[in-house]
Each structure stands twice: as structure tokens, then as C-alpha cells.
Amino acid sequence: MKKYIWLFSVLLLTNILISPALASDTFEEDTKVIYIDQLKQVGSAYEGGKKVMEFPVLTGDAETTTDPGTYLVRVKDENYYSRKYQTPMPYSLFFNYTTRAAIHEGLVPPPKKKISLATHGCVHVEEPYMKRLYDWTEAGRTLVIIMGRRTED
Image 1 (cartoon, rainbow, N blue to C red):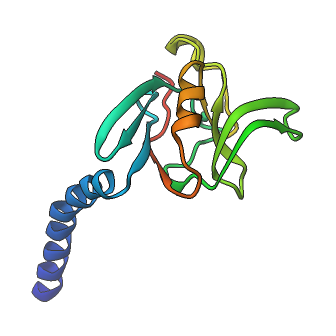
Image 2 (image 1 turned 180 degrees about the horizontal axis):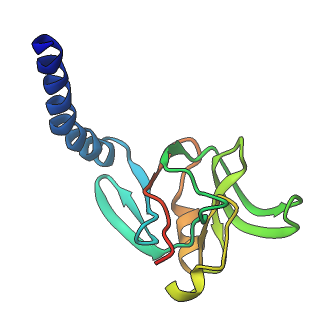
Image 3 (image 1 turned 180 degrees about the vertical axis):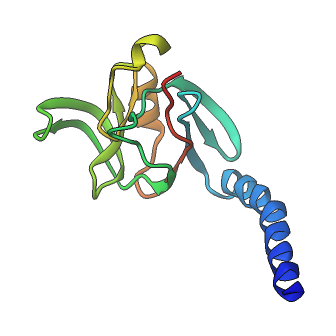
């Protein structure tokens, strides 16, 4: 039993010490990273480890979540139109092409009005930020890191 406790302790300690180092390596090694903080509803773009822009976002709600994870921008489409939702999604950066989840131009209301809005798993960013983010992003080379979950607050 002591052997298992010791092994678990070593694994836990290793995870705690190495995880922050791996996260910082992501921002240094990969040239471009888009970081979405769902709890704060803020996005940031990093290039070479330095923040180049910050912007407000609207992510999915409890029913239509924007799944946390690390993704790669696979496809860029300046004039995408969603047939499923019958709506334009300008400047789409598809990070989860299987579910058609993208960062795209869309309404980002004040916090109290966000509660009633859903993005169906996408990330909305308003102009002029979205155009700038779209032009800056490189398909196949820009990482998207989505952290946390949106709350009702």
C-alpha cells in the first residue's frame, strides 16, 4: 500500500511541477497561439511568447458548450455561411472542423446580456478584432487553447 501512495505522490508532484513548464513552452515554441479564457470571456493572441492583442469573446453556454482543449486552426474561410444555422460567419477560423466549431465574427454583448445568448460551440469576436485576428492567423500553424467553461455570471 505504501508503494502505491509513494508512486501516486511522485506522479502528482511531477504533474504539478511540469504542467506550468509545458504551458509556458507552448507559448514560446509555437509561433502563434490564440488563448480563449471562457471564465473571463476574453481572448488573447500570442506570437513568439508575447501578447499581440486582447479581445472580448462570447463562447458557448451550458447547453451548447465550447469544449476546452488545445486545437490547431485547420481552415480559414473569410465568407463562410452556415447552412445549419442559416447565418453568415465572417472570418471563420475552424479549430474543430468535425463539429464545425470556429472563432468567427459575431456579437459580443455586455456581460449581463451574454446569459441569454449561445454560440453553438463557436467563439464570437467582434470587429475590428476579428478581421485583425483572421489576417494574423496561419491555417495549420496557429494553436487555439480554450480554457475553462462559461458561467452564468
